[in-house]
Amino acid sequence: MASAKDSKKSRGRPPTGIGKPVGLRLYPELEAAVDAAIAAQPEPKPGRPEMIRRALADWLRERGHLP
Image 1: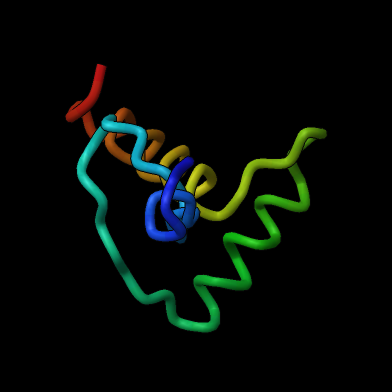
Image 2: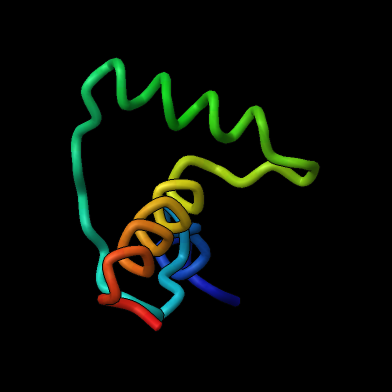
């Protein structure tokens, strides 16, 4: 039988092992703009992290930093 310590669930999202986590704070106007962009997406709607990744990737592609 497993001990109580072994059966506890870990907190938070499990690590994907892909990419490096980056924390950032959004100013209210940027947060509102990200949320508006999410609302304009078809279902299933992306979450904020995915929308920010998409916006950053588009910006980098426009400037030739990402193929």
